[in-house]
Image 1 (tube, rainbow over the protein chains, first blue to last red):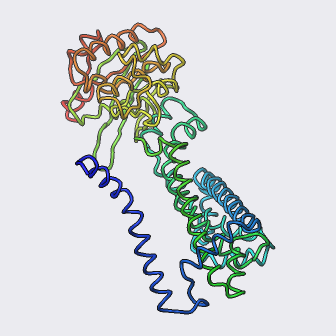
Image 2 (tube, rainbow over the protein chains, first blue to last red):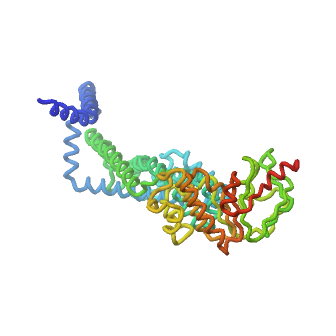
Image 3 (tube, chains in turn red, brown):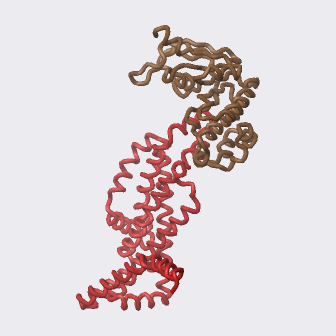
Length: 260
Length: 194
């Protein structure tokens, strides 16, 4: 092999190794753990999980569960983000709104996810409860970040807007909203993963008809550890994919976030 | 006429203006000189209604002012053209007047210090208001840019709708070149022992 060939091979290796090495390492550890435990009921092997995923891939009801869980998560995320922004607008614009709402939002932020889920199940039935529970996880995060962004808007630019007679709406549109872009995107990035996890937990407890959480619940009930592992792996992969997709979308639609 | 009558202004312990009296007749074209920290920017901020006097009164202030701030205060997320479009329908014409033709699509962060200075001047000049306030407009400018900016300011001098033009500079030669009256009201205050 000539020098160019060696360099090309080295470059390919450099690209592959960061992905393959952790896979091999954790795969080997997984196999070792499976052999050490030696009970399929407690611990599934990589081969069993792969077989389960292959089975899930051809089941139409599994795809429906995946699709509806994603849809519910997107609905909860949209409700949480919209609610958080609207409340932030109110608390930033009115001192009284801030005095009245801040304690409630602080309490919501400190409330455990499980409490929301159980309360939502008491109030609502079926597929709506997980949406409400996970939207309540997103809302205070977005509210806190947007409020912080508004209060830390550049005072010099606000003065400039005053001198040039922008008026309230033009000031909001041209000065406050663009300066919020960075904190808003950060809040969304931070809350999308939490929203997904809360959604799955709520689905496990509320057991709606078509849901990934319900599949997890069924796997537990029927002692299908291989199925439990397979669905958990799918949930992790989907979470990573959704976070990545969101990051790409924000980079595409808000490329100026943080420009300054 | 704009009249400062017994105006006092302090920031914490520091007294910037103390029983300050000053008049600016309609049509005044004035360069304010004086040492750093004397209160020149405070005067402009009072004229722009960004600050209020702690005591005394300012009479005859027009409802609106156009202001070139010392720190430019351009919107970093908008291009040069869009920054100007916020105050005028003819941004390209104003870019041309301050020698920034071809930079309309650049963001402030992509411009040099002198270019940003000229852009903020263009915004102040393009914004119609009876009172024009310029805080050190020639700062960071090379000689060519300064000549161009002086021409742009001189162009405003004859504008009938500009009832007052107040410019802060450290250099009396700038006032002479523009044909503006050079005043040091704050230095006089200091010399009078106030």
